[in-house]
Figure 1 (cartoon, rainbow, N blue to C red):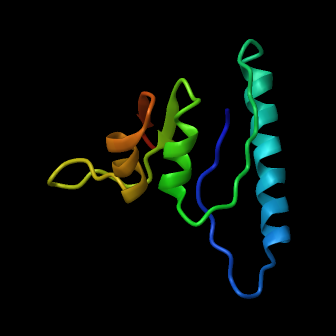
Figure 2 (cartoon, rainbow, N blue to C red; figure 1 turned 90 degrees about the horizontal axis):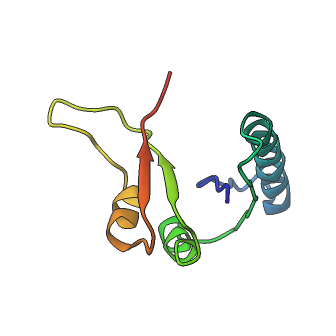
Length: 103
C-alpha cells in the first residue's frame, strides 16, 4: 500500500481540488514504482482525516510494514523524528521502517 502523508488546505483551496492533486501525484509515483519493481504490488489508498498519526495507526492494523520518510536532518544531539513518526513508533500495529532523506 502506498500512502502519502500530509497536506495543508488553505481557505483558497477546495478539498476536492487538493484531493485530486494528491491522487494524481500518487498515481504517477505508484506507476514509477510499479515500473521499477514489477513484482511489487502497489495500491493507492488516499484518505482525508484530521489526525495523520491516528489514521496511520489505524491503517497499520492491516499493513505488513509502514515505511516513513525522514524529513528532518540530524542535529548535533542526534537524529530528530517528527510527531507522526514518534506516534507510529509507539502505537503502530506492524513494523515501522524510517527511510532517510536522500538528496
